[in-house]
Length: 385
Length: 138
Image (cartoon, rainbow over all chains, first blue to last red; front, side):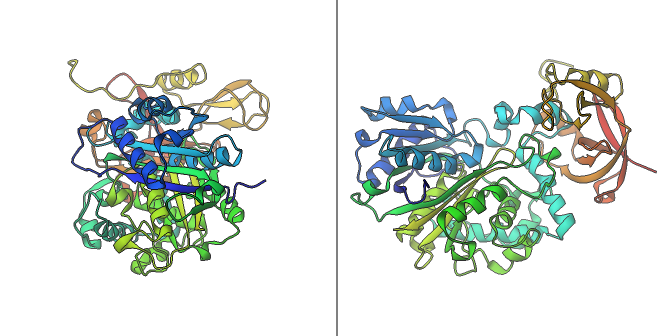
């Protein structure tokens, strides 16, 4: 049995994203996004019979949705706490649940107060996935994700000649896409020189290599493929999906190959499941907590060989009209940090042909990735159909 | 020191890691070694992932290391480290087959390249915790 084509994303919803803070709770933001996603699908809240919670921000649990949405018969609930890989991991769980006939319409809600609540940059110290580095690396002053990930970028630079200006290409292109999106936090264009002049955070990562801390919510509904035919929107099938965990998943320091992420294991399985290759992909929404993580994933996905990511991204290759349009919504770098759920929403929008000024013409096949904690990777390949 | 001054993170040793931290307090870098197959592992944990033995003994590291990668911290993610900025965090390969993360002393990051030989030293962090540090070897 394969999960390919057994589930479809039938509803998408987002709140307004705010970099300056939203006074509402993470639960309220998730409920608003969920109502939007359910309505987008043409469903009513009572039709939801499954919930996957990727990130229980604010202590939110499935029960909160039963209580607030008035769900009469929830048949499936689980959590996918893989940090930024959790949104796409939740898709795989949801497709498995509908493919197995456990339920028909699964809600995946995400929302956070990363700006006004517990700041994302230091939140990790409370997460069990960071227990090992918390004991052995934090006492040395390695506190935040930027500091754990920067040595991966530095080693990539030393081994392959990757440059900060190549990382800047990713930041600049992503910002240009955000400006096309009516719901992005960052609305001013930047140049490579702006990136090079931005202050150093954790060398070689500068401020403009880092993602935002945002308040907002995003949600999707995954339905059994045959049920999706009768719903409101053009059908977007999930045709390939996989989760991959890197070697030494709890400590990058001890990883045999520091330049390879969990996605390197997941991507070939997802492409095989979907029966497609990287060359077939029209648009890619790639988890972008930091510019380097995008570059590394492009290699791990097979768009180019290991070490060639720097050259691959040069010359606006990731822009609309480029060789591979990436993060057409502005990503975590410039739209909002919704832990990748905004990437899922954008891919569906692209494949429906509803991406407005950022629409990739005739986009029929796309992928979305997640990256979480110390290198967990997830991928979903979707097709119009 | 007053209560309002931020403190650096303090490890909470587990049964598996306590000998490692006790070794550092005595100025020795002790690494966990499988009591059955002899494989050295870091960070400390209960089970050998190679032969699945719970048996453990401890070996003292040679003190040699070589640069694997590094970062320079410029942003104060933790207030207690603000006075130390900028500081260089080096990940180094040890001849025992594991890696060690520690701050660099006595040189700036411009001196670093992959494979550069280092020596492991020890330093009290001002708050009663002894940690390894790296210096260039010569």
